Image: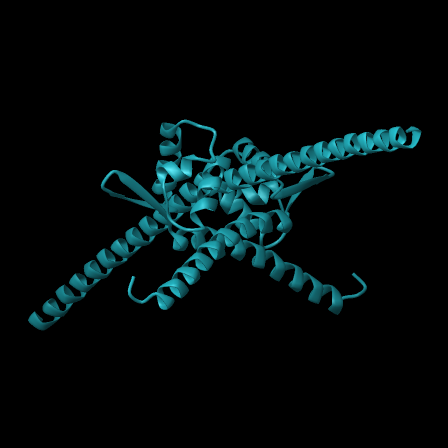
Length: 142
Length: 142
């Protein structure tokens, strides 16, 4: 009787523990997905502007100072800094200030995140077409 | 004298022709670049929204009706239609109405445009790193 009570209590504790674990695992997954989605939101938003793409284009050839980045853009330095802030918020660009010069560099891993998302959708569609092709080859009368 | 005059006139005409040609070529190039930039603006803007990415994700598995696309999204049908309009404006999605059903499909070439833009920037950066690596290997003391 005492043993049964002990076992039952242990089982109940295990249940609670498992539930807590599942809840925290779910919370982590949801949080991760929101972050991931958040990143893609910010990355694609950052790339949706021609001036910001010119900056990324320039940085893909090597690090550059804010002044260098501003040169080809027909806009004020504060406007360039605002674009850089959008790029930094997305993670696409990192910057570091040494003395009076702020040097910017590209973050290729973040660029890859966006590239891979698009590539997966494209290959998904190609797989769909392949499957459709196979089906039509097997059912020529339809 | 008459011959010189003739030659001079011909040269002047060739100059004008060349200038006209250069001007129209430039106009075409600028127009193309603006269009190209416009497309990238619209494509990346379309991909910057999680609901629109869910639609693209679904369509990468095959064509779907608007009702089907709306199912996993927690929003009204008019809201879904608005998202589809943004996707159609970017060229990422095409739709066709047969009877009362509007069927949407993905446009893989437009997906590729965005993918290639990002890939070129990423490989640009990798090329920069390679060049830097070569330079450092050749100048170990710097």
